Length: 195
View 1 (cartoon, helix red, strand yellow):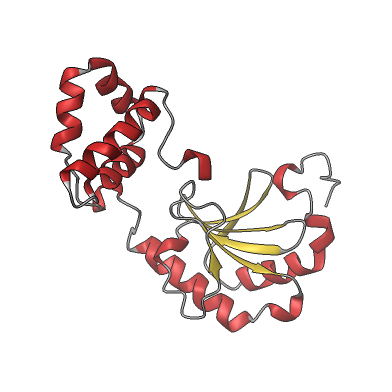
View 2 (spheres, one colour):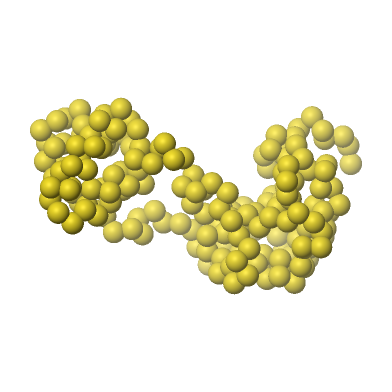
């Protein structure tokens, strides 16, 4: 073990949790995953797929599941660290070794491996496409609006469409369009200010 302190990155607190992370490693060693180092920390892969990562943060150490969104999570342990940004990543956070229940952790990991074997990944096209006739009309009359709208990532387009079309009455829809048009033109996503 050389001195790796220069390559910390997001793992700059790992030393604080050295024993705890060794405990998680010992659990992970019982699985068929292969340990690699990515982004300066241990990531466990199945084939070439990232399945699990471990790391230490300021207030907790964690095991994260790259496709954690598919885990059943019966114990309600998983948190989504950044809503919207990470669609599939989920973290299980611990603040002490006592909280690490090997049997439970292994259940989650085995489930994650199984999901990987089945090739479960998020397919963004799950959601029904929403069409807003009214917004389309606006865009026909205003090419700049259409162009600006098309520059948004699909999920942001979806947020706008959902916002407009979830209104029951046409006048509400029109009022909502009025509200979002300037945002679209300025390339501001509907929920950006909350992100």
